[in-house]
Amino acid sequence: MSWKKYSVEERKIPAISGFTIILIIVSLYIESKLVFFLAVFFLTVAICNQLYLKKVGDQLFYENTYERNRFFINDHGQWTLRFRNEGFPILRAELRVYFDQFVLPEGEKLESNLSMNEISLPFTIYTKQTKQITIPFSAKRRGIAKIRKLEFHVPSLLGFGETVLETPQFLKQQAVVYPEPIPVKGITEQLSILQGENVVPYSVYEDRLGTVGTRDYTPSDSFNRIHWKASARKQTLQTKMYENISEKGCNIALNVSDGHSITGYLEKLISSLTEFAYFAFSKQIPYSLCINVRSAGTTPFLYLPKGEGKEHLQKVLETLASISTQNTCLSYDYMLSFYHRHLAAQPYFIHAGIRTKDTNRMLQNISNKGSKLFEIKMEQGYGYFMKMEICQERRTGQ
Image 1 (cartoon, rainbow, N blue to C red):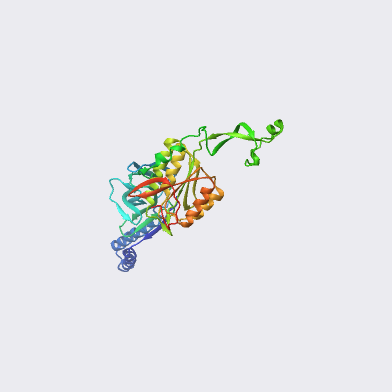
Image 2 (spheres, helix red, strand yellow):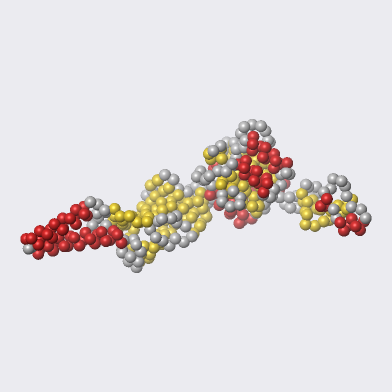
C-alpha cells in the first residue's frame, strides 16, 4: 500500500542551516578549524534531519487483506494490523487509528471524533522488520465497523518537525455487528398458518408440478388448465386438478424514511425485523426482504430474494446491520410499485414503517394481486405484528 505523505518542519531547521553556513564563512575568515568542524557537524545533522523526514516511510508496507468478521452485541473481537519496513527505521512514532463507533477498543484511551473513534499507539519499527499490532474491541451497537484511516506521525531526528503518513483508501477489515432483536407481539399467532408446504383440504394455492386427476371443464376455468390428452380420450373438455397446498412464504418491506429523512423509529423497526428473521429461521419460513435504501444494480433498492435457512438468516442480519442514517433513501411508494411490477409476489406481504395514503393505494394493489397484508407497528418500545387495515389516515404505522 502506498501512503499519502507530507512533512511539517519547524522554522528552527532553516535557521540552524543558515547559522551554520555563516559559521563556515566565519571559520574560513578567522582560520579556526574548531569553528569550521562544529559548523560542518551542525549542517550535516540538519541535512540528515531533512533527508530523514523526506525518505522515512517510503518503504513501509501494510498488508491490506480482506477480512470480514461477524459479532453479536457485547461480543469481543480484534483488529489485526501487519506492517513490514524495508526503508529507514521509524522511531518514536505515533500511530493513530480511526474507526467506526459500532465497536469500542478495550483498555485504550479513547477520543471521539464526530462519527468515528480515534486511538493513539506508540510505534517503532526498524529496517527489515515485520510488526503486528492487535487492537482488541467489543461490539457495542448495530452496524458495519471499518477502520477508516491509519495515520503515522513520525518525529524528526532532532525533534523539530514531523512526517505524516496516511492511508489513501479504506482498509478492508470489517466487523459486522448484528442487530439485537426485541419482542414482537402477535408474531406466533398470526404466522402459524405459514408453517408448512403440506397438502390441505382447501387452499388458494396449488401444487402445479403434477396433476392428481381431471374433471369436466367449466366456463370459469382458465384455458391453460385444459388437459388435452384426457379431453381427446373422453371426447369432452377436461380440466386439470392439482393438490391444494398450504403455501408458505412472505415478503417484508421496510420503509426507513419519514418524508425526506430517516425515521426516528429506525432502530426499533430493525430490531423487530431481526426478531422476525429468527422466528422465520426457527419455523423454516422462506421470505424475501425489500428496503427502500438506494442500491446499484437492476433492482434499485436493497433486495434479498426469497430464501430460508442459516445462510439466508446471515444475509438478512448483515443487510439490516448495513443500514445507517447516511444511506440515501428511495421513495417507498416507488419501491412498492417496482415490487408489484417486477418481483415475484409472495402469499403474504408484511409492511414495516410509516405509510401514507399513496402507500395505502400501492399496498391495496398488492393485495388485489392475491397477497394477504400484515404490518409491524411500534408501540411502547415493542413491535406488534397484526393484519393490516388500510384506512385514509395521513400516516399510520408508528
